[in-house]
Structure formats: C-alpha cells, structure tokens
Length: 239
Image 1 (cartoon, rainbow, N blue to C red):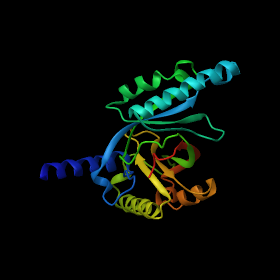
Image 2: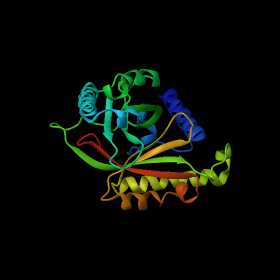
Image 3: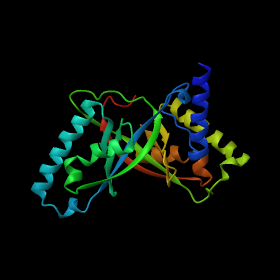
C-alpha cells in the first residue's frame, strides 16, 4: 500500500512539473485515478473538398460505421464531431496501450485512408469516467475547450512560488466548476507541447462556456489560452 501511495505521488509530481495542469474528470479524489488515454484530433484533410459529394458521403457513412465499431469494442471511449467552422473535424479518445497502437486504429478509418481526415495524435491524462453510449445512439452537444500555451508562460517557471500558487488556484477553480456540474472533464496532454489540456463543459451556450473558462486563474494570467468548440457526443458516455 505504501509503495502504491508513493507511485501515485510520483505520477502526480511528474504531471505538475511537466504539464502544469493537473488532471481532473471529476471526483473527490481524482489524483488516485489518473489513466492515460490517446487522443486523435481529426483535422480536415485536403480530400474533404476535392472528393465528389456522392463519393464523400459514402466514405463518411463508412467512417460512421467504423466509429460505432470502435465504441462498441471499447477501443474508443468517446468520439464526436465539432459543429463549427474550424479545421478540426472532430475528436477520438481511445483506450490504447500506446500512441502507436491508437494510431493504427485511427489510420484504418475510411475517412483517414481517403484523405478526408488527418489525425494528430496526443497522449492525454484523465480519470476514467467514460461509460457506454446509450442505445439507440443519440448525440448531444457539449463544449470542448483546448487549453493552449499562453504568451505569459515561460520555460521552467513552474518552480516559481507565485506560479505554484496560481496552479493551486487553477485547481480550486476546476473543483468549483465541477461542483457546479458545469465542468465534466479536465485533463492534461502528456507530450508537453503547445496544447496543454482540455475542458469539456455541459452548459447552455458557447457564451456560457467562454465565461466559465475566463474565470480560470491560468487563463486570467495569460498562461493558458482557450479555444472552444461545440462538440457532439453520444448520450450516456459522459456523467
């Protein structure tokens, strides 16, 4: 038990030092339940425009069948399209042992093989709160926020006491939004790039999602930037 506790503390320390964004998704003791998933950010490929409509629709139907298969098999925990004018078609979150394994699954998707979508892979940490989708499948809209590296973040400044206090305030705000039942999922990426993490919010509008994200101390300080998208996901998957 002592060894397990030490392992958990080490994992948390690494997450804070490398990512400066603690993973929550959201429970009383989320630090005990961190799981690494693989996220595929499905960017729109050049063939999405150049492919004739009839052929494109056929490929997208095959893509949908593949998505349902991934969900049914448990390889994907949640999948859904963005519903705004952006270069990202949607998001896959996969339960895989490695980024390489997840990429083989994503690369087999008909829309990827046809060049309609181009996956960008990232390891991502969260509590494992995802459930099986309801049947028959129905979609509802939540709001997906990319948390990106802001202009006031400097390399190596995470050890600064002021930044550590800001991190504590950031975590407290996550807990507050979770207690309000507005924030469903939050978690950091594991590759220490410009994408730092995500929020998923269930709110009435994009404006409400923007206002809630703006309360985050890391956002206020300019250490994080927020990019929000309406995201359609299967009912029943999120708490």
